[in-house]
Image (cartoon, rainbow, N blue to C red; front, side, top):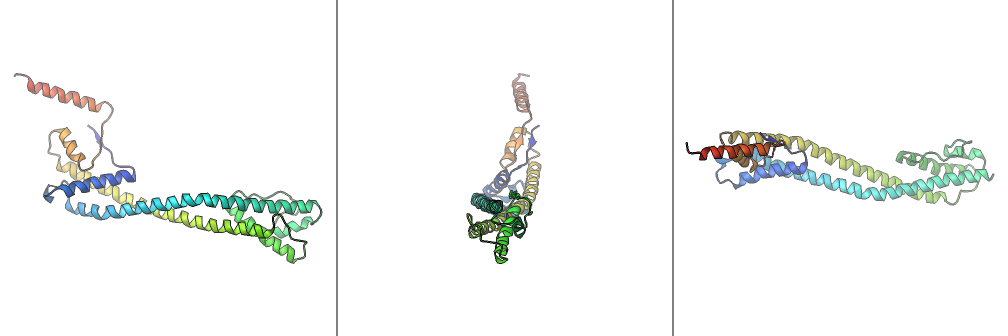
Length: 250
């Protein structure tokens, strides 16, 4: 016998619920409905909420993806300016224009000329702040002339753009996660409703002797049946054999 295949995607869940609802709306006599009327009322209310939640989740995810390209550009520019500023600082020290002790203003190792890791967003936030504050502190403490190319003003602008973009992207991610979690909660309710509907429908048509006719009646309510390998052909041969037997003259 074929087996029921419950929906495993949101689109399939919506199709199953709508199929059951449409069948209920087509019937003139509610007493002929293959599942309970209270269950139909639940579907009516739930389906709207479920579809709205899915729409909100999709919109939030699309907005996050759309903004990610812009945020990626802001991240690249901030990384470039912070990295270049530290490199120029090291060149200035190498030329003897500043002493190695100047690195301490930026929380850098005085004897290390390597640029710190700027791979992660958190590292960019940390070092961007250190570089901006460090340059101001160095100048205020008569540590020499400001560093140019890039000037700290350009570093600050690109760092602030990145920081704002980072905060905005985090808000978008939080919204996307919140709407996604809401849809996940609705899925459990949708699955429970579908199981109840399908159980009621199969029970209602349990008295129908012809298996093919019974499946057709159930499928009108949205039930999905899957045949195992070779099963459809075996059922066809069995039905053909029964028809031949009925036609025999004895």
